[in-house]
Image (tube, rainbow, N blue to C red; front, side):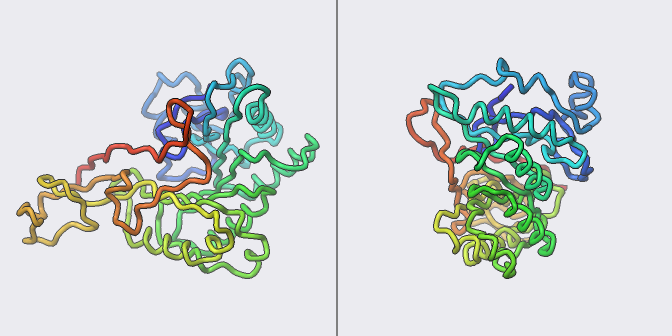
Length: 321
């Protein structure tokens, strides 16, 4: 059961673990979905956000190869590498993904994994490789770690654990960003682990306008990434700024980094008090130094004939009290 996705760096998502994670993050967007669905969500474990596995989603009849290659996000509505998930269940998911990576006669899919437990991911993946006698991971598998910023020590620990995964296709998701992340402050132990294997940084604001956000956090993190060893170690390093909160003039529709002070007006004459806070996803509307949406994997267009650029979602209104 692989479904189309609105996530701009994917084409599809596949969630064999349904909704479920044991971390208990207060701002978790995935937890809100089954709660909002209520009884229309048929799985009681999903409704309670328990760690579990939908084995029917691993069956070949529910994972048929597509005519066109896809970029599939794995278990984005929960934690695949949760400490409560048995390794045999993780192995079943990896086995199912393996079947679609290089099926005979069709273009293989790209699988994008994302975890908040890169330590468990590294250990489980190595055990799976040993159990299946696989000397290496597929070229079209990407493993990412979520780092929210604001805690450089925790970020460094997560980076070290991520680099424990035996893959040259690693990436970081700083989303939602919760503070500055000094990417250029990498200690010697991390440098010895070949940080050039981390080839992508995705960064973006929380969907909730009530959550703290400062454009300076994004700018500082991006600048430190560009001058730090992660970007310098490998010329193939990529950057994808996903979404930002900005202020928009309702008349001329121009975007501003901050709301004008009381009494100030837009160049069109509109009072700054009338400005609205918007979640902007068009790179063309970002500040020029942040208008970057590059990916290391191709996103097929609807015909599958050529890579497409990043998706352009509409900006979303947010009522500001």
